[in-house]
Image 1: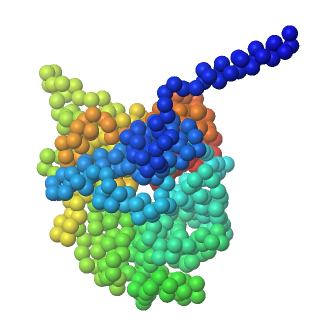
Image 2 (image 1 turned 135 degrees about the vertical axis):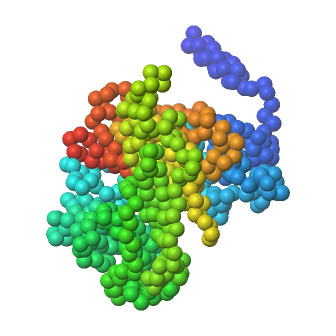
Image 3 (image 1 turned 30 degrees about the horizontal axis):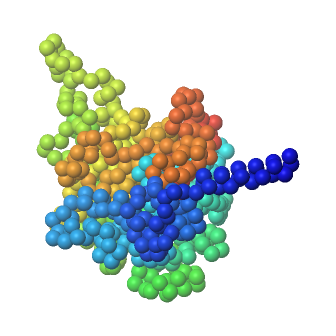
Length: 566
């Protein structure tokens, strides 16, 4: 009986193995890798991901860089290129927008091509896909146990977040990749206790890749420059300007070796950190050697201007192209009977301190009207006695129309303003050798509560945050709304996506888990108690991989919330 049982089990195993055999012949295994890559090039992204799970061979073939490079180009580069004004008029536009490893037009993504084999195209595709769908992971970094007065200052640059306040001094955190590392910290001098920092700026065009310079402005009108060594992970005090009677420094910018400051009394000052101007014209090695030897002289005032029309919020940028230094000040501006609009001033100064010129532009024209309502503001009381007149909007709505903008961000040519009425306004700046102008504003809808802060980058990507910090949106504003297709996108509300995060979110296109939530607050959280506990400080920054937001709890605790799209 036992022998017969063994024979029966063997027969069952053989029949099971026969059933597993496929009757369909395998035509792919006999093909060369080159032919298999050609076959895989016709598959969709989701099918490529499935193929990578079949075997080690297909994992390598379906992950080939050229396959994902083509997918990246077809989805993210070509549609963007077709939206840019003027590209369709080029004679070779059709050919240049067809994918080819050598002749394709990559626009601002050309740096990925120049990296050659170092670019992980699948990772880049996944990164851009997560941005476009609003999928990310969330991490929270506690930075203060109690409220800081004035608030903690924050700036972001090249994967670093710089923070400054009177209690913890100047700090730097790394936010790229999966690490959230406390990189460096230096305490402020004891004399600064009575004069806290009020402004923070980072040099984005440093002459030395191993050093990042940070500019701190203080309440007593003084400012200090710190140098962060990426090799030693240490801050070093570079130089300090003495206190001034001109008032609190509210805004700063740095483009080595030039510094610009703006005080609360609307005094604009341009400084040079070398009185002879040698650093501006010397080589990188010479400038680095001068700094290491401590031969950089104290800041020297080149020129100052007094204004009476520059209102916060404002944004100051500085660019130096020998022998000229250009200062751009974008600011909010009140208008008679029309609420608030924006203005822009460009000031050109020689490296020797001679004022070369100044020009102004604003978004007001003869047809200017409030963007929210068609009725003329501030005149509704004239029709109060007319029983047939249509009642105007409530006073609360008028206050929203005429309320000062909550934030302003300017990165040429985009000027983005946020409002307390749940909207933003985009302006386009045109600056030529002969003229300076600002286009009419385009109102952006999408937020469901007041917008406390927004930031726009050079390519037209923007991020905005609500006052409570529970709604974050990513905007694609490249090219503005000059074309008919762009105006259709504006009218259809297809300009932004809401950032969302959830546990084990499985993306149907990539076929894999793309995000994992690290904090409890999600898009689906409808608890008013949770929303009431946090407030956005209005600061938001981002780079290619992350969005960073400064939030404050009602108990005074502050934290950086990092939205990771990798």
